[in-house]
Length: 131
Image (cartoon, rainbow, N blue to C red):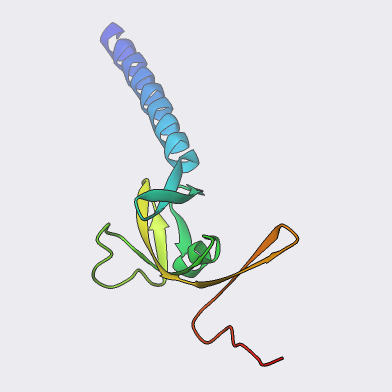
């Protein structure tokens, strides 16, 4: 009888330990945040914090990036910016580094009374007119 009682106590203790371990692992996995790092020309231009298993749209990431004098075009998963650009969505379950491809914009710099205004555009956007 003593062996049966000890066996039941051992099973109950083992079940409690297993439940606690499971609860801790699940709490850690569901509350984990990851960082998406966006790099351009060897510099970090944006870091985004996302929840574990969150799905993010590539277009939404691109729309959050602003670099003066450049137009963000595409994101790649390699520093060489080779192959096909990323499209659609990504499900994030680890830290991730993405690499940005940009077009350099033309700069029209206006200076008046010591104030500087920079206007950026693509070729053909800024058209001179005769006075």
